Length: 531
Image (tube, rainbow, N blue to C red; front, side):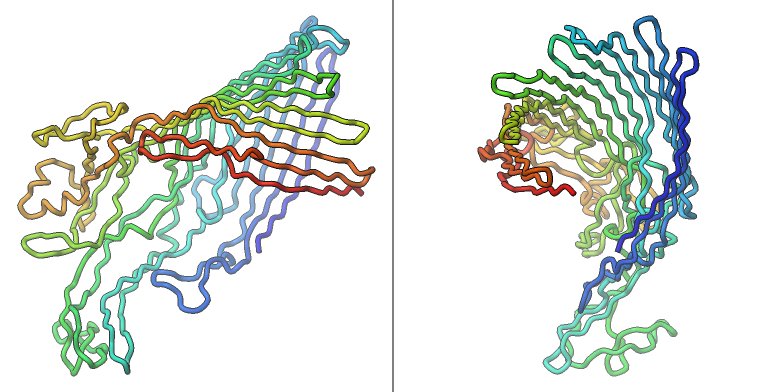
């Protein structure tokens, strides 16, 4: 069960000092969170490489925050200027981080040019701007990861009708201390916005431009492991093998039958699936424009018309400039005439994908028709969602190429496709079993001994239009909500989302497949009681 406890104390001081109205606030907040649940567990036989992960093993976390804000309004002739500055300072009481403080400053300003309460053609006109930093604190699972257990099968035998199957495996344990990243930084986003608010000629609304840059996003970065284990040859006997002292390595246990050890090999492999440490590889840039226009009520039909929406572009580039490793395959490769485990692991800046990120652009509007029928105490809201623009595009990673007719690499911009040619990307480095990084060289693919091992990490993209932009034509969806007041104690609402069941099919040019848009049709009702 999850528990959350919070306490807050706030002091405020406000007053007018001459012509300046001032309001100050100072506060402190304490939060405590934790979980005493069983977490992840299996009832009965558990799968290999799994161990219970009880949430109760994670200590409760205390956070203390101090926040302050100062707001002042200064009259300037018939106009006024409002300035607001504040900050929040949060401390995480944990020994799992070197940097335990989060600092969130913010600044806002609003210049009111016109402000009329009396009915006039222009009742309000103001400009506003704001800047701030917002920090996202790490979750408990990032601060207190569980140990990782890797079970590698060394011996497997189908057994007989009397014995049943028999297996032996080697267990590798990565303790919690090796999973913790004490240098983990706080995820934050820098936000800036500037806007215009107005109420003129019967239309009330606002337009806001915003820009957001997120950095140090929380991710899990794979840490390659080198596992040394014993792999036994296929056993075809009928007697159950038992552990005995290895005559070739005194003091070491070995499986054997009748006092004779079974044939085995000492192997080394990379393991890349389980050990993932918290990191700060997330990153995106987002900007856009949001708008709202309230056209007021059309009196003959008692219907208000409100139009709102946004234009937004987001560019995501996770793991940019970070050296990441490929997923290791335990399939053996031919080396010196023998099939053995690959002694190398491919590494790539930004990851192995031929794409380094994505760009998403969307422009939408919501047209809201709100009708009041006072005699029936009824309100109906019809919302038409319009998506005028919806574009996505995969960004091309560095080093991506195609092959010409002579199998020579050709690098370039493939945002318009590759004319049917397959896309390739080479690793930037190879890691050997000793943990050394070897720079990539295309001549390695033709190495007489390890060529097949090196070629395992040549990445390919079969879609020749991977970097072609996906652009959908405009599409629409309608939602309906009817709300009825029942006396003073109850309110009942019926709603139908996408009640026309509109699901147009759109072509994804980057893959050559189709995708249906809009949410599924669904109906429902809500009942609210007032006491």
